[in-house]
Amino acid sequence: MNYRTVVEIEKKTLERWNFLLSKDLDNMTDTEKEKYNAKTYDKEGGFYAEFEDGSHITIDLESGGNNYYDEILWHSADGKVVPFDCNFEIGEESEVLETEGNTYIIEWKKVR
Image 1 (cartoon, rainbow, N blue to C red):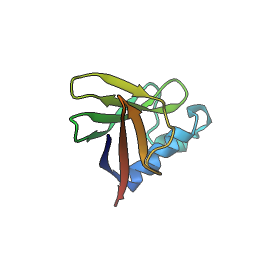
Image 2 (image 1 turned 135 degrees about the vertical axis):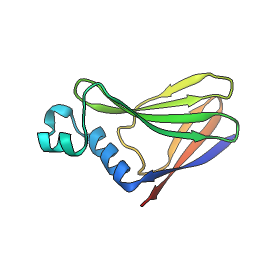
Image 3 (image 1 turned 120 degrees about the vertical axis):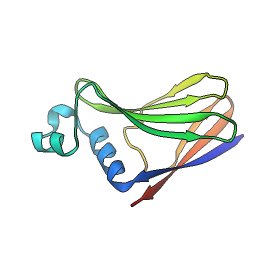
Image 4 (image 1 turned 30 degrees about the vertical axis):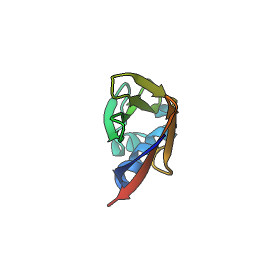
């Protein structure tokens, strides 16, 4: 089965996340770190989207010692959790995730 959901994302948030995902912290200037609120070993709650089968997806922004990455987790209705590889970019196109014989599509809708 195919399941589809729409996630609204503010243009400013999309630009910030994609900047952080594209740069190593060591290569950012102090001005960039301040402007984008870049920190090491940080986790920001990001996006939550539900699908018609009762499952949901979470996408968070996390940083380690020198870079940011996106943590994408699919949660089944019965509590199973499946992690997906980092994309290091969000919101440019739909995310397509396949698990449990189903396809889950997240469409990004840019707002403001």
